[in-house]
Image 1 (cartoon, rainbow over the protein chains, first blue to last red):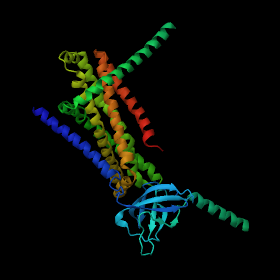
Image 2: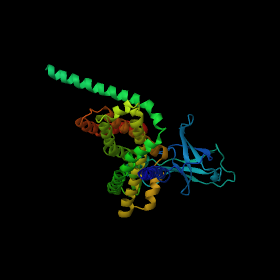
Image 3: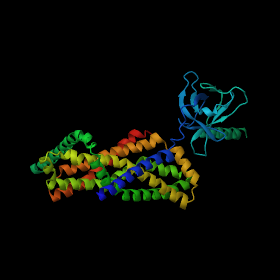
Image 4: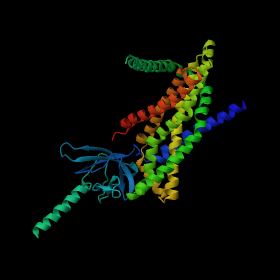
Length: 157
Length: 259
């Protein structure tokens, strides 16, 4: 009988350890805790080019994450990319004339949307669309611009 | 010429018959599974044998895999100037692939072989037949609790393996090689997704648990009841489980992580 009780404790310890490892993995290793609360509100923005932006990419204001990209689609009329952004409800502070730009963290890092607050009194509501946007910088375009400029200079000379 | 053909034919027929017995075993075990849950005592005993006694090798292997991943990942990432991403490399490779797969391979060697040998010896010493004589269904009394224990144990062991590995990578990366501690964790948290990575890893190890327990129990239940038969069945368990785990892993990776 003594044997069985110590065995029970070992099994209990094992199962508890395993479950604790799972929870630790879920909470500490994954981004489960940083999932946007569903209470946020969704605003959209149109971009000419979103580069490598992905759903769930962070939306930042001054480096602070205020929401996440919820959807990426194409407007069938304007042929531009429409990005739905879920902003946490505690940050319903953005003026109507705020602007959105797509930045890259680091040289090769992931892309995120940076918001720049405007000056108007009225704030963005759910469903509003940000009018002023700046597309992602596509490295190839930059390089080709640079090359064409070079070539143009040389032909002038 | 004829004898070669005959041998080929017999080999094919034998493997088909094994496949058939495997299927029959599966069908016979399925209805026995729910009733085993009514006797948690038997499952707890098996959890001790399969889980607690496997902890040592799982934890040590996980720690060393994490340490090696830390060293190798750092030396590669440092050439691209992104040593801060070390945490992501270690965590993703452990949670997605190495954790479930290596745990299943170690489980096959540590616990699967023991299951087969135990069942095979019970069969060759006619304990299983004795149970049937006493109207005790050996599938319910012996096989089903071991199956449950295997399925429950595998995800827990895999989670421990991955967690210990992540800390192993941390010890090497932060402690020895000077990666910033904050960016190690924050990179992990920003890149590892709960549903895409961790839930899929747990699903994988559940499937591996079913496969490993099933193969081990079938080989033991189906073995030739002699000393040689048991030893062959034990070898087959380790080989077949390893092959099944690697094949299933490829299929599940292709399905889960669509690139």
